Length: 447
Image (cartoon, rainbow, N blue to C red; front, top):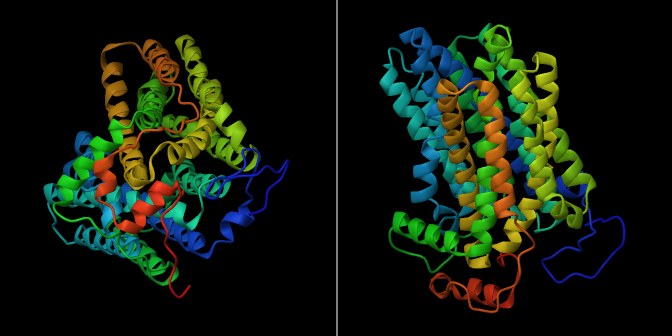
């Protein structure tokens, strides 16, 4: 791995605090290239499908509420899937799960195209598909630090994956709208099913086979709940997770209120589309700068000030800024998302090896669910409280979360953590845990 700046010694599995990674370092890993390409393909299909399904439901019902439920149902399953299926990241072969999830999602989306499919059926299929997402993301999160060792390369790889999602929010829904001018909603859903199937084929052919960890048996749901208790019972890990959930839950307030705020300042409701581009645009820039330019030490040091920077621009919304100024403020808020790079590294360091996969899976599922909860909470507040109060109020709540949690560099504990969790591991993983190794001993076969 190439580094710049002063070189310092580091123990195996860790990186020097002043080291950096380049995109060449990250994209030079063949498995990561496949994982990244599959993510782009499936994300493109999902964005188009979200627009298409919303239009299809509205065409059949003429109900704005039911059309909006399409987006709501994309968040709710993360609560159930993340809690009851979180152990999949620790118990099942990663490639088989990723490929199976893609193909199962493709099948469910294809079923949405069945003629005369009633709206309850469409929403049920959407909910079922949503239950797959936290399993897929949890397993992908768990395999990423095996492909890219924890440190600058891992953080930059995570940044690239996030940039795809943020870029989809900036341009994806617009592209989806343009495609629907050419394709019918059902044709767009077929395109999504094909994208998901293509993603599955790419992962099957381009990633290594890794056997499932041995030594775990019994109910998947019971194991998932036990892992949830153990993960949240570990103080440093819990602190990092809560920070990574509560800050975004407060930061979504302007997005949740984008349409009513556009009307509030005298703009048409469609101007909400411009407002929704602001935070993702700033986030993309922040990811590039923080993950690529800053050293690991600086990434950790800016977590708190950058997170506070997310909320500072919200105070200006008390004065009802116009569309142009509001967009600038939201871009500045998005720049504060530079804190995420430091949190990525902290979570890997804070979680004991026996709980690392669970922590990564729980982190992704919890983020999606709390963001959905944030959308609902701030939207409900906007029904009864003036928007010029709600958005600054979200800033105060976010600043309190940052000031209360303030995750720092985890300290090594001298006590033996989670005897029960480690006892359930295979002997190989237990040796790795006791020796302080940073990742499971897992070698790709034939690659």
